[in-house]
Length: 496
Image (cartoon, rainbow, N blue to C red; front, side, top):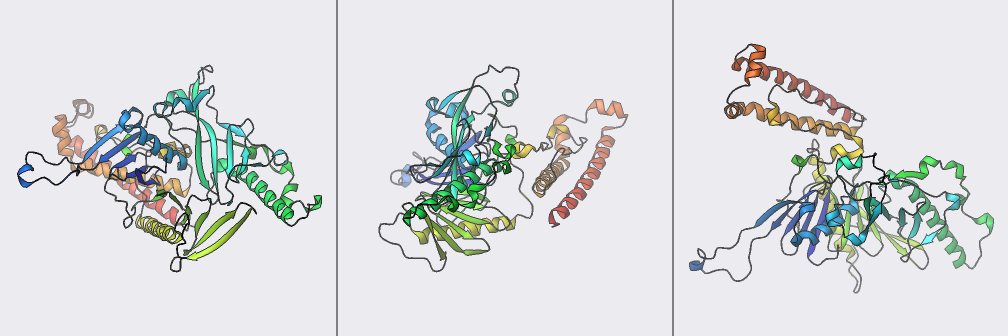
């Protein structure tokens, strides 16, 4: 998919929206949930420029832009959407799997939406070596597998996942005979940023990987290992690994339809080229066969997978230095070389990629990300995935038809973390902006509705003007209270 000659770049942003650019100049964008896409076709510039006398008879075709539901796309765009979704699902937290875009040969019947799996104990976990030198760990029952790369710096996972369903079908527990369809999802992760679901199987794989390297060194030294030479990790007491840690819940597919399509934003003005990089927060970027991943921590780090099994990673605060982890399959060792952006090695004939070009581009991507994050005094408007992530429940935006007298919705059942408070701040700011719009255009609303509802007038025994003024005053008081709450939240976020 990523090797397609027609694709020049793919970007997964922090909000999990996707931007794909093609050699023809076309641009495809997926919403964060994957449910909707836009396709921007370039203007027709084929052939020779028309003569002045022909311009009025045969004007050039303007750029065409279309917007559709992903699952209902026409056959002309199905192939590119399948590729874009595969890229998104490889790096996003939860996949989007519409049945219409998953080949039937890649699905199988599944009689439960339960996503719990259990991993083997350390004492009974046998090492399995993949064809490329990967260390493989499989769950009990074989529903999921984790493959640790020979470098030990990245890993892939494969797991069975039910196809996306409507929200009502996810909660239908009264029909156990219902048959679902499932497919295999492949995801890629860095060992420096591990989702909790993969913590225990990754620990198993790293222990097996270390044991295998130790054994290879012993055999290379022509000395058979003695029992007392076994690494200390092999003596871990199985009772120290609880049943809870051995069990995990696999990522579930996103719902078939989006509950917040009004939060879909399209970045059609961004231009991705060698000189211009995305100005928004990037999570993963694929560029001509090389994958660049941003690890967004206190100090952001860029990690590069060139495609040959090696990994390059910036060194935290010293982000002008990059460490290249290069596995040597025959010996099992991983060689590490450190580069500086200003003193990169020259290209060698026959090498698979240019270290200098890759490191320089990775440094520019990291600089753009750091600048974009620094320029965001407050988070952007939450994406359509916010309320689906980690059980958070954010209320929707204020609707025009609710009128000025509607109270500002209150967020409830939200864990008290800095990340969640930031989302709440962004949500409240969005409501204030919409409220200000209502105030500024109140005369338009009255013109559209004719007047304030007569029911409200009869109930309060006041004139329409008095009702409107009173509502505005109450709404302004609520806005003031909201602003004070926002200031308090910002102060909490700044506290250590």
